[in-house]
Image 1 (tube, each protein chain N blue to C red):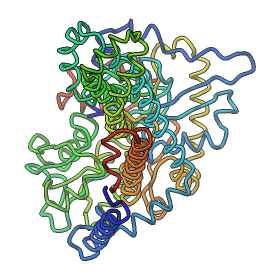
Image 2: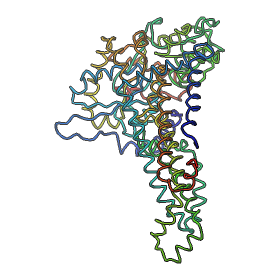
Image 3: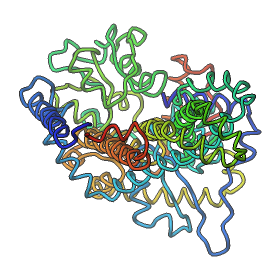
Length: 320
Length: 259
């Protein structure tokens, strides 16, 4: 439901075009000596732990940024919020940003968000089947039903990439849309043949006897950049200094998070409800400081190839 | 109701039996405990929530959205209801519009609210006010229309002014209706406050439920749902008590007193 309304909002933003964005995108000018107020919209998932940790560690306040974070249900709801200036910084997966850019929405990536670990058995994302399933490899997913959290997005394109890589027919995979929390139950009940899940539901699905048959992020590209932080092209142009300081603070946060997994597991409890015992066990993603540009190109090619968009947007305008 | 002291016990027994059933079903393996935890596990999660500062902030946010929306809706509903109801021409002119707007489910306005107010608290407030307003308005309209014609004629022949007629004639007649409207509006407003938080993501218990769901924290999710239920029960108790107090003179309440 929220996705539909986000789609409607972005649709109307497209309609009003520059008018909608012209009136906004600039944070209130601070009085001298006051830090710049920056509002960020993220999703309450493991991926954004660095920004919470960085805020806690004072990486943003050191750079004169007073960061406030709010959580939305999905990346699709965050894009409109950034474009109409309600928030200055958003967090979204790369495919959603590519789709937004291909529709002419002025989004601009500012720094890396989260990346795959690149290790097949130890990634934070995977395709899981039931214990007794005849599916042994990604190629066997052809003709089967796979649950993804959003159709025509990063989930189905990367699962198809896994199937393609394993020598199966990616077009023969049927996708259905289910929320991550509902997937382990749907798999157990046999309503779907396989589920694509990320942590903490990957741990939950494995604990329920599930078997991982594909590491879709690993199969798509080496060290795939999954999501990034972004702003509006408007703000990037009108206040490059603020964006630069945010990027520096975020880069430091990413580096810190990558080096201190225990503190990451601690900070999870402050903005999610992930139980402490689950947080201690789950597989953390990687937080490199740089966007893997080649992998963004790969996701763009996959999105075009799977018919999510007619042609890829100008990546040089989208990438920082 | 006629015998509250006795009447409450079977209710409590029913509640305990329900809690016991929720404890037994997952323990017996009839439903997967991972998705429907036993009630003792939910109670423990509730105790965990009570220790989190975020929980109390969320509870405060929900109560604030709820009561603010309710206050706006009740004030607007009372004023509009008395004005529209007292002027026959206005009443005729607005009747079809009211009947058209009233049945629109508030949740259908979510996209509009988000377009207008983004994902801030005001978006949810719009839903709450819209849903609660009609409950009050329609009841007040009925109440105003129910004024005894003989009493009205009497008031007119005694040359009571417009204000005096509202105060001594319309208000006492409409009050029982209005309070029913307020009671209905209170529960509807809570439903919409939580819905808005859940769907739009404005701060409050609804969003905490969504976060708990997104974290795979099933017992915490149920615990938060229980809290919203308790809010509803509390609201109903308070409005019922207020109704009895304010309408102590009214036959509908007096007849409840055992003879």
